[in-house]
Length: 461
Image (cartoon, rainbow, N blue to C red):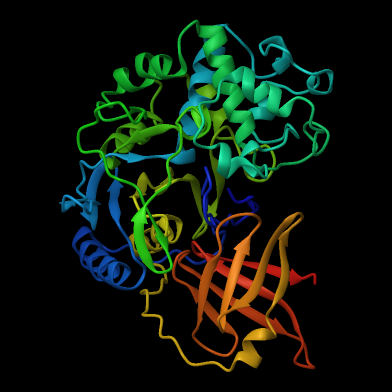
């Protein structure tokens, strides 16, 4: 899985358990369109997205808890010709984290734990170096524990069942990346161990605790912990893109994502969840305020809190084999945008950003068709090299059979097609890459545009 770059933007590239794309901006508030205007613009936008950006999934736009648009696009199951609908069930990936954080807050209110407790109070075989780490550090990605989904062998081990003891054995001897609480670095490992703590403290499985304390009370009948052997009505199949073709997504054992990304749901159930967060049905206002207070890197407990169109946005997304997702909440406006996709090449963060722009009468771009041009091989060869998008996160480019090929870490390679002499489109990733040159025409870096944001990268070799 890819490493994450999370500041005001977060890029999803390839396979990840999280996808968040928050674009900060200070823009004058425009006059708001009415529901009919929103529907018309959404129809136009989604038609172009289907045509040009390989979208497959379901969207929901709601104001004051009432859907304005709730539709499915593309196929839930290509082999059976079953279309996506508002009732289609999708794996959520890291949207799961907000439910994990809610479970922790419920247990805190019951006096079973405190977020300031050291995690070693609850974890067996906890190494001495982890003693300063608190539950709050896990919730806010400030623990310094290495992210297991970034480890070299993850794509090979993702098919294997994993217990909490095995995860501890995998990580306990690895050095911390920084001192606990020192900085923010997205870490699925932290949320995996939060699931372990929930089970230890509650005496129930993670799945059962959430079912009994969140899903059942809120009437979320199409939400739960995903397991392949479980019969789930309206379940979508997950797909990915390889060499421009749609194929079935790779298998992942669902004990791997666990409390970091193993839940499934629908757009309608997530609206029930969204609406409950305006109430004290699950926890008190004090606990909700704590959940939605940023600690470091604009991150609270399982949510990013930022600004868009000079409005507060509370959001998170996810990516897991075959699925990418996004939920964006504008609490002051009581507006909710939910985008669930069953094709990894889709960009739910970008779609959610653009749909929110439609709702608030702001600027957005209609997706355009990408047209390939012929480019001399000598020009393409200038872009060969390694580009660092974040410390330790490198995208490498090579030329194979006259085509530019990219690779992020040890992930599968992906092809790029030229649109101009310096701009290339990656069909399998739904991403634009623009190579940057200095005054002498030497390539010095590139800019990755994906999910609605630009990420610069310096050429390092």
